[in-house]
Image (cartoon, rainbow, N blue to C red; front, side):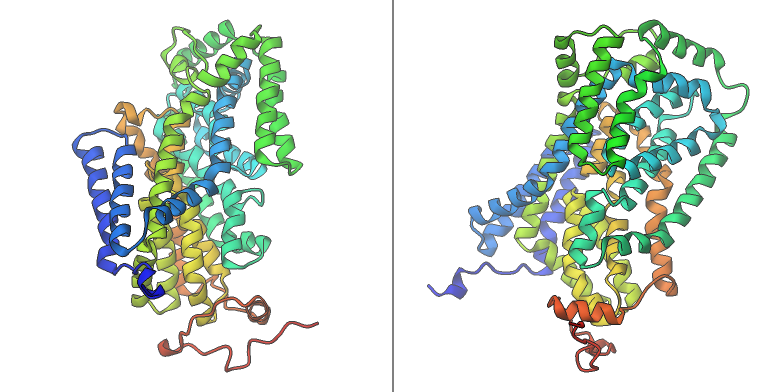
Length: 507
């Protein structure tokens, strides 16, 4: 048998769509026909369907298994963050850190500015921590409690939290996705961050204006249920020692982040600080701490809003999310290894040849990868690798691409419920979607900063604003690093090699 016969075949566009369409169909049946928000089994079925397609194409199981576990392996740092965040939630509730944040938030914040303040607060913390998930699971959780006290619908608070947390993750130099996007497109990290500002800042300002309007129009003024707020703060005061120094665990974590320490050790330091605080301030035993870190915190205050918010946390509370992430990543890895995702992207590239079309397609592809594969990392890495040569062939800076895949990858991840980001948001903020509270999925359209950013990016692409062309330095970098450049001369673009624009860098 020749070596050519041993090579797996590449799927056609139609065949590549089969596992995607069938998986979405099964997912739709589970979510909308059965009304059961547990996407695990449909995604597992999708992985099996992809494997059957792979075998048909000539892949052996070992090859596909390697692709599945390779993608899962890339995600393990994020799974580790999930585990530590689960511990933080349980221990920080027990220590009084979260109750203190809620208590003072209800005392200090005005209901009218609450949503806007929530977005700003989560933005600052997320930039400092470099992790949207860590922000959602700590500060975001406390803000959900404050919002409940102000009688703000959960989905409005969640939308403000998500807008701020994922904005911070997108522009923080400590964020893994912010580092991944320039890495796969071959651009400088800080150039990448600067190039995201033209779309990110307007989206945040628009979102801020909407949240301020919502605060004054929807929440109300002096007639907000102060009796309810007094009942919540009274219940917190009765069940916890409340003091500003109980915020020390949060201060430690933010301080370590500002000092640019790695996220996982920084977050775990917060667990240790919270455990010590719980034992000193709340009288918890070491065995209690172990239980809170593993199984979460449990309390009966008689106030339903407080009980539903504080009865959570622990490693085990994250297992639903972690299992979903692992299955979704496995599905994404199988789609990539069998060439199905590449075939779909190649079909898209055959239809678009203008810069605006390619920029729009890059954002849409990252979003679609998020939708189908459930993985924000794959939604950045795969389109980044596939589209970069096309941008170079058109003579445009790949800074445009790195921005596009962040907009469709990082920012759209929390808006897809079965995506790793969306599943975590729903779990950490206690939105109860799995229990049938589907109205809380309204956080998706209310996360204005997340979906407005790619919309603005597409507008800029079609108007030519903030769409830098390749510089002489870019051309030199492409040549010196032997970066792939697609031949786009058939579509009216100049060949940079023949024009002598690819100059070697100075010695």
